[in-house]
Amino acid sequence: MSRTRPAEPRRVYLFSGHMVDRRDRPVARFPAEREGEVVRRLEEILAREGAGPADLGLCGGAAGGDLIFAETCVGRGVPLELLLPQPLRAFLEQSVDPSGAGWRERFVAVAGTDGVRLEVMAGSRASGRNRGLYSRHVGWLVERSLAWGADRLTVIALWDGKPGDGSGGTADLVEEARRYTERVFVVSPG
Image 1 (cartoon, rainbow, N blue to C red):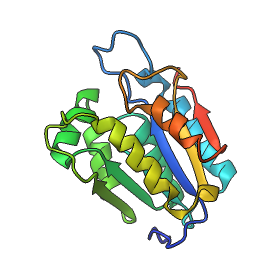
Image 2: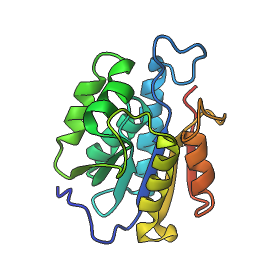
Image 3: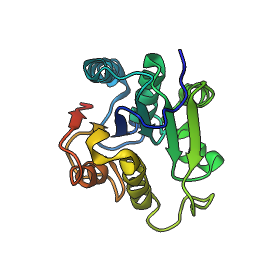
Image 4: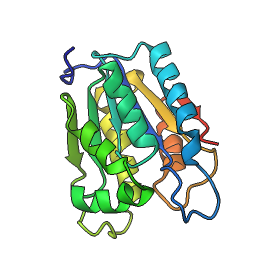
């Protein structure tokens, strides 16, 4: 099955979602034991949509929702772009490794799959402490997803429906994307 990015995707699936809870998270948002249910719901949505090689998936790549969505796309043969907010090493150290064992291996497996493209947001610095990094990342994700037209855009969010821990989270992406499409599917992580 070919996983080359289609020049004109039938549908563009933009995903944003919560990271799996770290051990030190004070209030649970996406507990690791909910992963199986999240996988089932994402598979259900993509199956109902008929997602496959003629489509394109876009997400960030963080441990939790992003990687689960990425794995689901890979499993369906959907070409995928992992759009990172910062250089790979800093990204892995800040958004993958702290979530625990196995997430880095999952990231490497997805990133190494034929038809998966990895790109780092322009202007990001290795430290990841540049002002507005995640807000700019949300804008970049939405802008990239609209490159083929709002009529092709479907947004899937693993979201508890609450404001994020800071700017540039899933809540912000959903709000921004709803300006362009009503095709928004929300999966609750809790």
